[in-house]
Image (cartoon, rainbow over all chains, first blue to last red; front, side, top):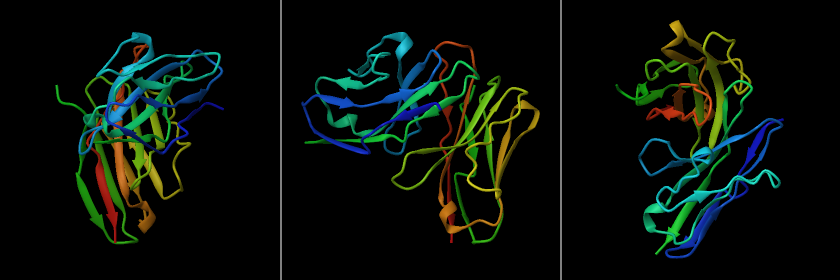
Length: 109
Length: 115
């Protein structure tokens, strides 16, 4: 069955340290993967999508089909990165998007 | 145009009462989702509408929960005989499924408190 797994509910990182938020997926088709972010008191919004191969706010994510992973990385954490991060998978069968349970990133000063 | 709009923003209800939560998706968006976000928890999928297809109701936690989408636009999530464990933020999202890279747009949520 299709599934998105984010193993860490909470990740605390010191400012300036590297960040890696883990995401693994299970899907038999060709996956499209995304990262969404929810800052305090704001709406959940798209951060980046794997198809664009983009870097947003210093974050990047590489799709690794062999490891079925789509980890989110940033070399130097900033305090404003503190937020809830969700990994998401869109299934090409019916275009339904499923989300992981999320990881709360807390940047320590 | 406007983004996804949800109403009310906040709802306090007594245990056992029925509530209706409304979602106005972005015009033209064919897909609509409902999620639940409990305090300190992540997103819990509830239901998915896609065009004229039968909705995917696999995430509804009990038969007290139901949702409909009229005319392919506005959606209403109904919770009957509310319980305290129903207290959560209910999020609606919509997307225009255009294939590769489709983005879901979220509303601001309805915070439901059952007392």
